[in-house]
Image 1: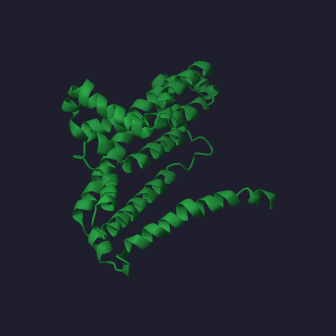
Image 2: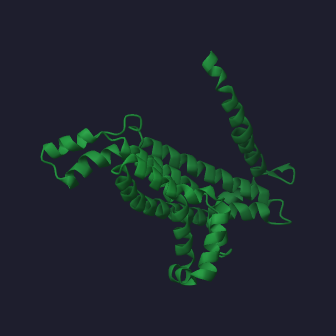
Image 3: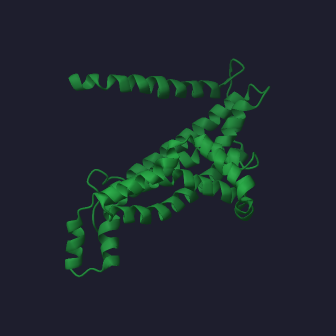
Length: 265
């Protein structure tokens, strides 16, 4: 009974900041100018352009996650084989930029790409520039869960693999990689979900000429003299919420061994 008491603040927090805001979103999705109407709701659902932007955002989030994984895994693997003191110091360096406000970091990248090294933006284009900044912002969130998982792998398993005649590649593929799957899944979740909802980076780096799904929602709520757009923005938010929940369920499906640290083939 005493343990249940500690859950009450969490329950109150969920009701105030998750349940109630979601109810408001549903309310505004079906309420236009004080009238209960579904025309805006169905019109938004049937708007092919909105689904195209959502698909483009999913692709962008996938690219961001894939690049973060390809860059983050080797870094995390190298850190896991270093002394803990050295690895801890280097890990802090990856998170030092995170101490600065997210918007300020994006403004800094905007200034870099606009005034200091404009050749990068010319070479990569708007989409490439947005992708680069998204990778920069979310790479630490891929490295840390991978590092935590890799550093906990029992070294005796690697020694046993070598004693049984396996080379470095075989040991990695049959021992290290399977045991690091929980870290991979956690990293993918921590990068993909925020990337699919990003709107600050496309808005600032794209200079208003490159939109992702988050920007569509922002524009719907900020459009002046269009009270019906609250319904549009709320409907888009519901679609995004469902997409995030589906993505989370898929990630959880591949994370069955998270508590045990994975299984070897």
